[in-house]
Image (tube, rainbow over all chains, first blue to last red; front, side, top):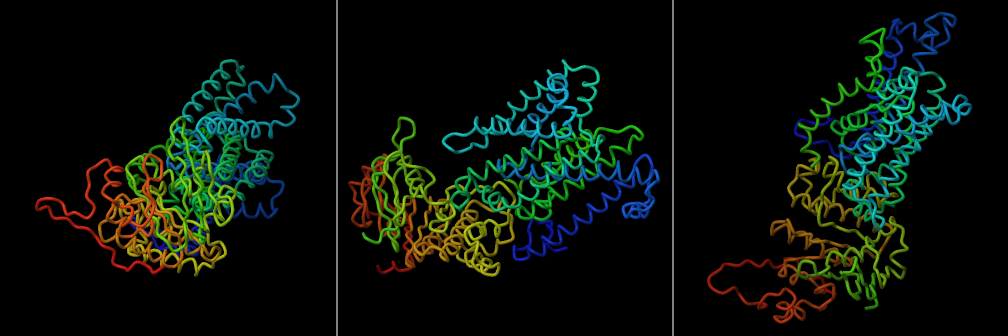
Amino acid sequence: MTFFARRDGRREDRDSSREKFIATIAILSVACLLTGLASIALGAAAIAPARIVLILQGEFAQSADAMIVLNIRLPRTLLGFLIGGALALSGALLQALFRNPLADPGVVGISAGAALAAAAAIVLGDRIAAPLMSAYSVWALPIAAFLGGLVATTLLYVLSTRLGRTSIATMLLAGIGVGSFAGSLTGLLATISDDRQLRDLTFWLLGSLGGANWSKATVAAALITPVFLAAPFLARSLNALALGEAEAFHLGVRVERDKRIMIALAALAVGVGVALAGPIGFIGIVAPHLIRLTVGADHRLVLPASIFLGGSLLVLADILARTIAAPAETPIGILTGLIGAPFFLWLLSTRMRHFE
Amino acid sequence: MTDAILTAESLTYRAGSSVLIADASLELAGGRMTIVIGPNGAGKSTLLKLLTGELRASDGGVILLGGNLAAFQPWRLACIRAVMPQSGAVSLPFTVREVAGLGVDGVGRSLSRGEKSALIGRALETADVSHLASRLIGTLSGGERQRVHFARVLGQLAAGRTVAERQILFLDEPTANLDLRHQLDLLDAAARLAGEGVAVVAVIHDLNLAAAYADDLIVLNNGKIAARGAPAKVMTDALMSEVFRLDVKVGAPPPGNIPFIVPSRRAAAPQI
């Protein structure tokens, strides 16, 4: 197809942008549909796609298959799409904001801050506010993680902003500091946790969609969907920021306001993802990169396409996570790392010249 | 001058204990090309940043079209003035057309897709980068990239003209990486814009180019405006020698048999 990247790194002119947008989103929607169907079909008990369609239409309501599809795999798949999309979107936002195509929620310490807050809620929540935690735990973790991510990001922002201007380099370095500190505190929490908490914590810190249920999927949908809907309004600002903050201002962008919105959206997306599935790496780097390499860097397309691709990738990783060592589940963070890290290094070595 | 689009009144800018711009007053009028010259560290870029609104003056103020520059919304400001920066690094793999389109996209919100595309096409043409339109910006040479940014600001001005009648174009060392022909092409295009009523302000290091294109020359030295006026009046042996700390003779060929090439502008100076 002509609108995809050719080997020489040229792309079609912007004039074909609407066709490119529609074709890209259509292809990614089909990919989502297929991975979604596979995710519902595959697992300890395989269920034929035709039967899944019938079950979704309300047939076989009393069967074990219907129970598996409706109560286990469907919410898990939806959760995977939402969190994968959120991670990919936050990666795309941070990469534009920090003018660094290698930025990732993990790199700038947002994941670590979110994880610390969520770990604190797991370990300390029982002791401090046990009734509250048991009643609202499904909301408590995402909100704690969002606040943790927001605190980490705000801290970075304050550390690296002078006279209303943010230095990207300082911010990245501060991110390493904040991330290490949050990581150490999380480790400290692990040492004071009891056996059950430690097991919870360890498995959760590796990342997993294993605990998915409808209440988690609902929480994820309620908190992440607004981020998906709000982010595309920032596309123009993100495009302009690629030239630099001063240049974006000259182009008419309200730089400081838009940066704050981007940080809040990224923190919310990462916080919810971390809280419900643990810190899952590399989706935030791999998905936006793949999109940019194939259809270009215009955020009007990169943002929605990253959401779709990130969702598919995470659902795909989750299918592998529960099938390769079945009946045992492999933590999904290990899988995204195993596949994502070498892929990322390959991208780096072959494509870095395009990013200056 | 009563036709001033922008008036700066005793601008002073301090960073820490050092004064980068001291008590600078100037007016920018439509239809005139103002060129700022001066040695490294004279404050040329700082002065430009104060005039574009990127920096806020420590003392003094900038009046744009009768209003306080600091009170303008960024979008409104972007319709009135475009700024071509010194360094043109782009952090993401955009194509040339996409980068050039950023100016039109941001400012021309009310334009149709066809109108935008036509403005971008014309800007690419003027900056002589049409043939690079589908290349990735990161694969271009420094000079080519600079021309793409020139196309971007041309597009921004053209889109802004649908909203704002009186405009300013700021160019910070626009000719730094360009070959001789493209230097003249760029400055000719800027002079044509001035001919259409835009106030053009450029920082230029090449004194010969500055002399050839300036309606108004501003000589900056140690953060102060040392002289201002027509090149023939301002470029004297004494002032140039003093400001650039070098013994120079204006208009004298180099001694000995050294060949020298001084470009002269091709388009006639606009009649004012």
